[in-house]
Length: 264
Image (cartoon, rainbow, N blue to C red; front, side, top):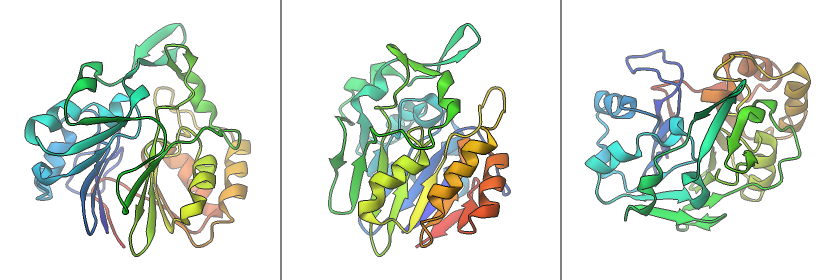
């Protein structure tokens, strides 16, 4: 398995940084895109790395926010065969609330009926290598940054968010923003015993740049310290400040910036 970061908030190489996430993953059976970012950054960076996105066969959109699924339409223009797996509720309206203003952060609802889009509800097994799951129990270490995010019924409960399990020689857990909470997601994924966990934890407000409280970070440390065999690669919405705090107490945690690769 090889994971290449094509969109992420930070870069230390020739690739362009952009707020958002897109991971290109090659497995024994698949060429996968996990999220697509918000704009053309994915396609520009893939070209630099010599990655042919027209050969991708599976796309996972982690949830219905533009920084993860904004580039779906552009992708469909260059790839007419890939199956794109999206939770049905991801195409519903989603907003970020700043003071008294609601900003649309959703993905294009007109794409919901596209023939390459596969709408799913809850957990879903793609094949023996790939499993998608959702998390409804969000009681542990839930990020206060989520309080600014809404759907059409009120505060977002993130039933439109899904994570991916890849089962190969080692099992990998791939997340988008981890809105349901890294602790709650790991609790549900524990049946697969992932040895690699990649994704954001949503611990910084992208507008105000404010990181969550030390109290919450300490609670996350207490919960994640039990996973001594898991290598945590975090990125995107975790934020550098939160990452530095967590990684000082969790030695098996690393930051994954744009252009970096993991080979398993």
